[in-house]
Image (cartoon, rainbow, N blue to C red):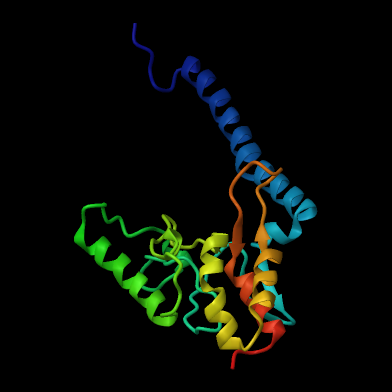
Length: 202
């Protein structure tokens, strides 16, 4: 015997299913996000707000998103392949160029040439993270080697002793978590802001 769509048996199944759906939607779609967001804002207010950096009332950036610097008196970050502009947080991504794609080799050679043109007397090899873009295109960090490669150029442009620049790099190098997890990294924006506190480029 067929059971019609309006039978009491089907109605008895539908009501508990809707009740479970409603309870789970409220718990996981509203209560849980509000609870975790509230805890994060209370325990880690800076990070929960996007790790924003302010100078007075002016927002200058975020510790989590890189920015473009082209002046010789600033440290340059890792290249970004986001479109339509570098470090576009609304369009995070890489170039998707394969290792055999000629366009990738051309882009890397152009970046190396720009670095060497900005500091022609530099005998150090160009660190790989200054010549290749990150997968996100938003990486705010460079390696300590990439910062050291640029130190002489920045020191000349700002008229500061090289030792002072090296000390700033050391002070703004993030160590591996617990001493073992991750690799040392330098936040470019934080380092450049510290440079500006030493005085504007000449």
